[in-house]
Length: 337
Image 1: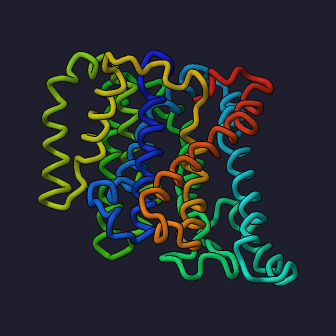
Image 2 (image 1 turned 90 degrees about the horizontal axis):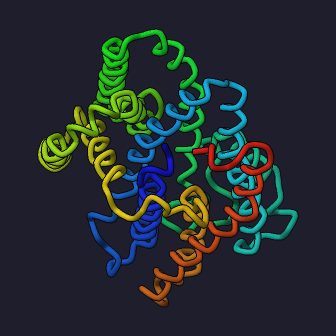
């Protein structure tokens, strides 16, 4: 299924939009300011969740093997994640004014332990690194990996709940989870708890949208051109006028599904590598380095494009040196989404 659609392109596109958005926000440079692209990190992350719901559930449905599923998920996520966390924890020493003993202190160990355990919210910063930046976080994007892992754990249980049900019953269950997630998120947002609202189960509506699209793929393929205008209108009205989030996850899913199966020559986009995950993992600390060293201030758009290039180059390295060898080690990497 993976190579008969445009999901590879979409994942790279959303990862790249996150990079552009974070570069605009973290740099604070007025010449970069663009409200549309500055809003893209949030929207792109939610689109990632929708795609994950579709692809990861379809992967489990295809193999129905918990061991293979677990190994595939671990090999897809963990090696690159651990490499990036460990590498930057050492590399950023060269961008601090501390001695070796001061830098590699108990605080450094706490940072490493928290981030390797997917709890970067406990220790997002390193001593004397990025203190003058808008945020001191080394890699503020890593919170989504924790959410993804929690969703991966949830998938087998949801599959067991759905597998004996008819499609109508599956849809009722998924829509119910969607509604509960929207309600939970709305309550948290109303009480000012924005960070909790974007954790599970607050963002489960996006994952469930992807699963709904997969379970009813034949229906949506037939009706997608009819549904698309309503989906676009729903996003515009909810986010642009009413500041609501009732139908936005599903509406975004419709837009993604439409493009994923659009007849454009992008189905082999990842022929030479799936760089989207690497782009997402490395971009934040690279942008932070550019900000700390005032490269955006000194060189403006030249630094902007140099930063983007360095992010892509780093992701190519991670794919070829870390991700691809691990994915090929036992199972064919083409089976891992």
